[in-house]
Image: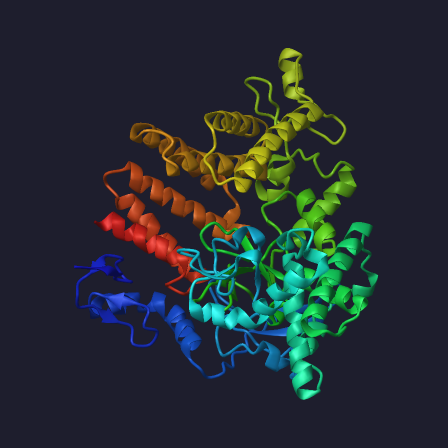
Length: 592
């Protein structure tokens, strides 16, 4: 048997002689019967994969750029797009003298205007050019600035920008008294790369740089009307000052004014993409993708953004439809966590992007808030609770023992009338809300501490998380963000103890069993499939792995993992992507 290949049709390990798809070269089959049976399912992905490897320019009209009232430039579907459709980049909305700076290269992924920048916390674990995980720290341009590469080719591709940057930082008085890694933020590094490229382009041909033209098109909606706080103004001035110092020491010239750089910083902030890896959906870097900058925000997104880390190339951006998109419908992603409560989403969009979301979910939230006068919390009808996820996030239940009624039944009466009639005692809305807020603070505090420290949680932390999760299940809807978030943190905490071998094998089995119960409960009530499908698929992968660990008969786990593999391939079509390799290895271990 050849353990390196799995039949794409039946998901079973193959023999030494297997058939390979002659078009995309990515699918393997036992025989012609398996290949014919899988064709209907495989043909769409096969077409995209073959187009991606082609060197000819793609001409596919999937979308157009259209200016809509209140939305500015928008990505509009030119035709019906089924779920799982990969959006193919187009430069039709980019002016001709900017196209050369952002050539799509004939692929199915969006290219960055300059190589993106890693976050400081990731610079010792990932290649600074292609963002792939490092096996060792053998190749380094300079330990002073924490640049590491996975190969000599990545170092060579990134050398011009980073070598001059490191030398400049060594000489600049701005960085002599402090750590350059903290002074020079990712935004400053990205801005430096952009203006250095503009300078080289304009110095060589004496014309306006295509990169400058591309950046000029990244104008935020109502740019002149955006009001910045004093802290935001100071931050932009600090980043601009850092960049001016860097550029001046490398080129001995003042090429950009402070105002011009501050405007460019705003365009990076409002149009940049937080680059996430595939295994934990954790942010690892920052990049600018001009062709994708017309994608607006919605709390009911119909696109999912993913990033592909290819060896010896900068990360590319992929957009995939997560539901059916009708012709002339706007194509949107979510700038924030779409599973958050209405108040959290509103606060994030106002603070980070200076706009109020006008999607259907947020419009309903503002109407409830205006009607009830208390953030839309006073909701009483069970019918509306079942239909509306945002109401599920806000509604609270009576915590009196033996009662599971709403703790208020009108916008005026803030107590459980059922308990009052039955026993004379009742829970008031403010009391229950305080109970909920205290519990979620405990969860967020432990979660924040764990994200800063990769070590396993202590037994005391696990007990606090379990207590908070039980409390939130009592007073909140099981589909709400509060219950889902506390359950997710609890599961991750339990699995962290297994991962770090804190307990003996018997106790590890108990930990996995506890994690499985919580995980299956939150998945069964989750609305992630509507707003954040990758989160749902990630939880299904965890369930499959736990079932393999616990059960001697892997049949159920294998069936679930096969579905997970197909779902991941919709959003990460490259079979060599890290998450796809993890799922493949898990399936292979299950068959052994």
